[in-house]
Length: 319
Ligand SMILES: [Zn+2]
Image 1 (cartoon, rainbow, N blue to C red):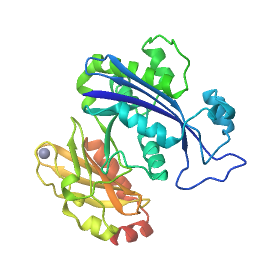
Image 2 (image 1 turned 120 degrees about the horizontal axis):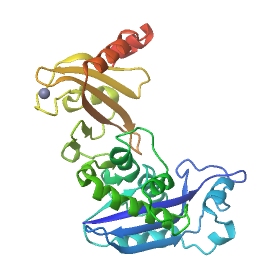
Image 3 (image 1 turned 90 degrees about the horizontal axis):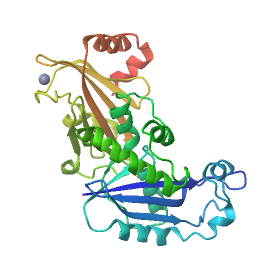
């Protein structure tokens, strides 16, 4: 299997252009490195794209990536670069790897905007090297570090300048190799881009990691149908597979994130978190994570629930 380590640069509306809601970020450069299983760099991809929506460079973008508007004139149309990218990725099995969570999402949005064939009809698995870096080198620290920070900390030689698509893909690939050699088991912590939600029950995603489990549901027409679904609303212990009785049913403070608390006789408290999402057609789906937590953390959740205002409590009864 290959790793397609990819980085994008994009431009956005500035003082002279109005933002287009379907395309908040227009890709102007794609850089990628193909890394094989042994960590060898076996291919490079580096293309500038001539923008057609935001044709003058946003000041911040221009400063950051050292690119001027007239240079973009040399770029190729998005479609041409995308076709070339797909051909370059090739037929072999691969997984994307990026620094952070945005690139695969924005790539798909740009593909859609141009009416091109989707990368996938389902959520796309990828390795978020930024998350893995926190997990492997920062003991799971929630703070996300910059790519340059990681490169410095790992004493990776800085032989090309940062902040262009290719160079950032190149450094991400170097970091990926370090992550692998430090703790390859952690590379099983794959992320999913959910620009495309699962289409059917059979394509829903269920993965169990060491210390939590993740579930990505298919889409539903509305919230009532969604919470009526047993798989969505269940709190299952991912260690022993028992369906657990809830101590606190799903509740929310902001209508986007829902929490529940359950108890496993064998493994203790289990906290459920549901993030409500919408696919591009506006249909609802959830990303649910369940995690075994300490008694102290369970108390915190109980406190949060107990001190929820009356208005919120009433709204929650209507779920
Ligand atoms: Zn259990």
